[in-house]
Image (cartoon, rainbow, N blue to C red; front, side):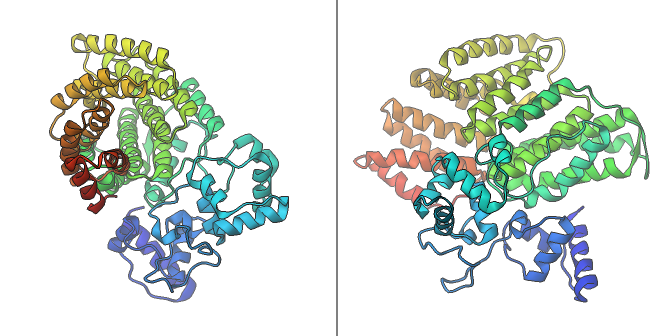
Length: 531
């Protein structure tokens, strides 16, 4: 469903249900996707819920917009004046935030509900720690919250905190790995993932393990040639394949927030052709591979922009498409991205499981792909505190990377970004995680020296990493020079991940108030607008 088709479906619902003539168009839908409009009127919200088959406004990313402190708010949501209001958030940072917003509860309201059931005293600050401080409520408190939400104790025990919370539509991982199911998944996610503004993971360890085990253990499905619609010409497929490098380049240059809408539109085009055209098996598998790579890119752009649930949805649909395409290595690259997301969100056990599955599938792959997947597992192991394993895997990655130039066949096109510059940067990331700043400095210097000019986002990332690393080495002056350069890159590439990094670097520079450059940079960062 395109933006215009969605607008027309909403217009039709309003006319049939309420007798109201409306002229919503694709421009209006685009503004909703970008967050420029966050609270349509009640009839519009009803129409969107009906057309997109969701239960609540929050699942569509709709928030109350307040022009002043006297604007109307959902009952109870702002009872605690120190609590961030939903309209001030671009995303929901935690499943519990989402649950409260759906029910109009402030943090203190939830604390009071727990008191009523357990006689244990909690305050809004405790709830804030559960949502923002990485703290989990004890089991008895979780059961009290579950009782209030109507969730059974078995679900609480099976899924664990916070995955049992009823925070919007769950991602299904129990599906059959068939061709038709893969296409259906693409159709669902290409239509709605762009509107999903949840900023948390929805899949816990059990679901992740089930997904990767079934992906590893299931053969590619049989493709029955599609006989519907017009014939899909191979020249169209050629054209779509040739556009993939452009999508990758735009993502690397502009950042996820700048390109996710473009990639989603391309994914919808490919998905619609798969669903409504006639093609033979080779053509169908080529198209599925294109859809898988676009889904991976859309997921990575969403991840980079801070929309973690949307990223999960895109990636799982992409994993199913790669399986339908019978392209195991393309699927391994998608798993590699999912692992990185979990490293960023400190879900290292799940990250290790996913990265291990990706590498296990790639033993006969091109050496560049083996090196890429090996160094991902090395970085994940380093994040988990396993220095010995990380260093052993780094050595294996180095061996594989050394074999890549002489290999008889070319690496897959999507692996092209993993060149020497990226390899050096990922090795440096490992050394930073195991607290070896001298080694990290050498690798980061090489990475930045070789970094292509077009990869603006990654250059900003590695400049920030190197600046932090130089602070560790007590070289604050050079760290300031790199920070200044990174700020220029951040104006071009819109990345929520880099926004978080520059803010953490700012806090470190603030400790050197006696150094004029550091003080000036802190003031400059404070004055800038980021994602």
